[in-house]
Image (cartoon, rainbow, N blue to C red; front, side, top):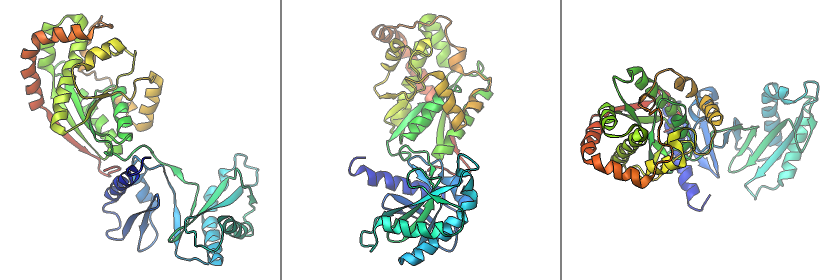
Amino acid sequence: MRKGNRAFFEHQLLDAIRANLKGLYANSLRVVREQGRFLIENTEGDLDTDAVLPRIKHIFGIAGFCHAVKTSAREIDELCVIGRDFFMSCFPSLANLTEQPSKQPSFRVETKRSDKNYPLLSTEISARIGDAIFTAGLGLKVELYKPDITLWVEIRNHVYFYINSETGEGGLPYGASGKGILLLSGGFDSPVAGFLAARRGVQIVAVYFHSPPFVSERAADKVRDLARELAKYTGRVILHIIPFTEIQLFLKENVSEQKLTIMLKRAMLHIAQKLADAENALCLITGDSVGQVASQTIHSLAAVESAVSLPILRPLATMDKQSILDIAAKIGTHDISVRPYEDCCTVFVAKHPENKPNAAAIEKAEARYFAALAPLMDNALKNAEICDLIIATPINS
C-alpha cells in the first residue's frame, strides 16, 4: 500500500465501523484505530459480540476480526494469569479443532511486542504464558509450527490476548475508489460485477432498464431485491429504474435485427453516462464476460463501448459461468437471479445478432437516427423511478 493511502483507507474503515455500530450501547461503545488495528470495546463492561459481529463482518477492507481481552497489566506474572484464564475460557469451544478426534490438542503462544521498552523479549513472554497454560491441566501439548490453537499476545499501550482470528471480506473500504454506475439487470452476472467493484472500493449507483408491458413489474421487483442484497455489503444502494419501452420500440423500427442488440446496449450506455455526469461518477460497471454470448465478443464489446467516453469496468471479463454462479451463491444473489422473470435484455434479443460488428460502421449507423433518439433518452432519464435501498441493520456505510 503506497505511502499516504493507508491512513486514508483506515479513516474510511473507521467511519464505516462507527456508522454500522451506531445505536449500540448508547455512549459506552468505543471504536479506535491503533497501529493497524481497529479496537471495538464497551467502556462499561463486556462487549456483546453476537450483536456487533453481524454489523461489521461484511465491511469491505477488513482482513479479519477476533475476540480479544484487553488489560492495562504489565507485570509478566499478572499477564500469565490473565492469558491462562482467557485461554481456559475459550478452550471448550476450541477443543474440537484437531483434525483427528483422538489426537491430543496442541497449542502455542505467539507474542508481538510493539512496545520495545517492555523488559522481556517476545520469545520470553510467549514461553512464560505458554508454561502457565501447559501446567493448567487441559491435556495440551506444545507445538510451535502447526498447532491447533494459537494464543496471540500483543504488547502495545495496553496488552491484548486473542485466539485464531476469523477472515473478513477483505478488499478496499467502500467508496475509497470513487463512484461508478452499475448497469444492473435481473441476471446472475451484473450483481456479481457490482459486488466485486464495491469490494475494490467503488461506490455503486445502480441503473435498471425497464420495459413494460413487455416485461412484468415482477422483473423490476427482482432487480430491487438484487440491489437490496448488494446493500447488505454496501449499506445503501441508489437504484434508478429507467422506462425503456419507447426507446426499444424506436430502435426496433429503425435498426436491422442483426444490429439491434448492439444498438440497445449503446443506448443503455448513453443513458448511463448521462446519469454518471449527474452523479459525478467516474466509470460505468457491467457484467460482461468475454465470449459468453454473441453481444460479448471482443468485436461487440468494442462496438458497444465506443458509445461513451467513461471507462467501463468489467470485473467478470475473464470468468467462466460457473465461477460467476459460485460467487452469486456466496453473496446471496443467486436465488434471486434464478426467478423466472425476464428483463428487457432477454425479451428484445435478436435471434441472430451480429457477433463481429465493426465499431466505425456501428457509429455511422447510429448517427443517422441519433438526433431522434436523444430526446427519448433524455425523457427516460427524467422519468426514472429512484429507489433508495437501505438495509435495516447497516453493514457498510
